[in-house]
Image (cartoon, rainbow, N blue to C red; front, side, top):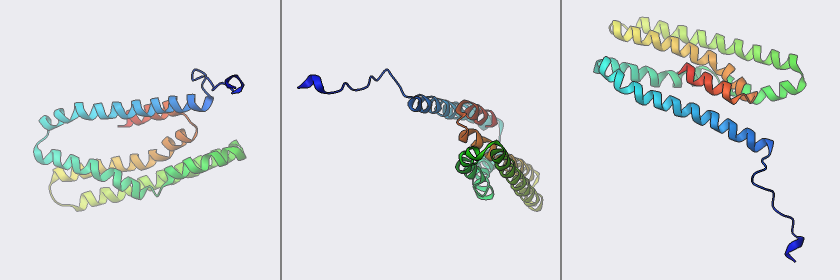
Amino acid sequence: PRSERPLPPSRASSSPFSTTLLRGHAAYFGAHLLVALAGLVSMPILTRLLSKADYGLLGLVLTAVPIAAMLAGLGLGDASVRLYPEARARGGSQARRLCESLFGGSLALGLAAGAVALLAARAADRGPELARCLALGAALLAVRIASAVPFQIQRAQERAWANAAAQVAIR
């Protein structure tokens, strides 16, 4: 008979996992939406302020920096997401030591990659505009690599709103 079947759980009652998932999704979606809107607003402004050549250089730098950061960062940010829960389970001192090691490594890699890019900018004798643009790219590269680990540690700690706010602020 029908009355013997258990009733399905109410959709109104949500598990802690689904609540956390929805909050995290809202934070990251909101952050991506804000970054996309900022791009839509800034694009017409930059096209009016910069010459075609300068806008092209800016596009080159903004395309090359994430690719170079991914390669030069050696995956330390992703490693922090993978390793942090294991270190936290072993105790606070293990988690702290892991965070310090990964951040130190990403900081060193960021500074080294930025220095190499800065040397390449100085070696490229193609005019002051290109040198300035490459120097800006070198600084962005260093910041991008060094900031990867703290952002990913925030993800591992399930601090979605703090991570999303930092991602919007840095872009």
